[in-house]
Image (cartoon, rainbow, N blue to C red; front, side, top):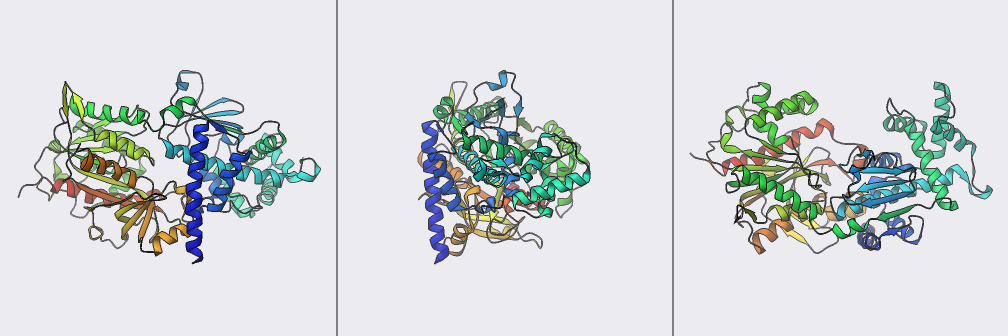
Length: 559
């Protein structure tokens, strides 16, 4: 009963958080330290997401969550008071250096000492994602300020804070022993063990910037103090162009028109089409990998080959070069959607040296693989892709035979690297639920190392907003949820609209949905902030790709 109560509180807080953020977006600005910012903080603290760890603990700074967030925000965001969210407004034509976050494909620009501009091209989900991460960052910054300055002495810095400042500003060159002493002071301030801080110091830093952790902590505390004392209040702005463009499919339409133009130019636009949303390597490697590296395919799929290719950039380039010689068309996206595309003409492929040599394929089908979308962007790009297109004064609708969605997701019933086969998508916080016949079945995945689970999937408003209570509720009740992700319901909404309502495509297509587990948010140490899958994700990724391609190739066979 207590879990259900917390789940309801969380659901309500998530809904209110999104309503609040949407209101502030259309208002145009807000102050993180003001009334509006406090409202967002209170709701985020109520939710207390697993990914943000000890955020709600006042005397302990969350280090894994901090690394996770800073990997997705531009370098230097911790030292800026003003954050401007903009659309593609031509900043690249100025002299500003482009800053691309380590784990997010978005262009950012340091305008001056105190302002950072972040380009938002992927829609509302990206805005909510950024605002949630910034709110976490400000919560931790205010904790650091409270721990580093004495409020009862007009915010005089503590002795510990002075040591951190010396390292962060480079005021003094420290010996190894002095650096260890500084780390002890840092661990005292952060409320963490020396071992935890040492690991964080190594994770944050590199050869060029070994003291990055000290600089980040110092900058967060300093900017927070400036905000509190009125020296420079933190503010978040949304540009007028961004507010005008969001929700209007501007970048999705550009992207889809480019894709359909390439299909038409290569006389592929009237061929049977199989659409796959996935990564940019697994389909290519399975169809061209063996020939490219000179290996002979065996009856058993050689997953070590794909692991080797994933680990070596020269091999990746070799496979791509070979694939392009065999007719693969690569579209390096410049529409602003950040979604690259591969077009593969199956009539040009010899399957003898692939894992599909036993399939008697005969057809002129075309596979269109496009890179991962982000949240609500999935509806935009799929909706635009499936619309009719005019070519040489003729309007044509694409002959879509199948749509496959493969991605990574959080698992509730298994472990990292396992596979989830959804039977429905439940859109969190709404009544939009989608039931479908999945051409992939749990029986397709029988393996001693990788387990497969079947059930409903929760399409969440943001992976960074989930806590154990709400996830346990979805898993343990009759919702029978096996995992959570951010795009499934949006994709299926677009597919349903195109096939059942607007009749842009045939309703007889088959659909494949398959996900591999990038994390388990119910397990401590297995959330997204604990790090990625690395090469552990290779086998489940290729197992799903194998089954999708088998079903595509078997849909056009001769006996």
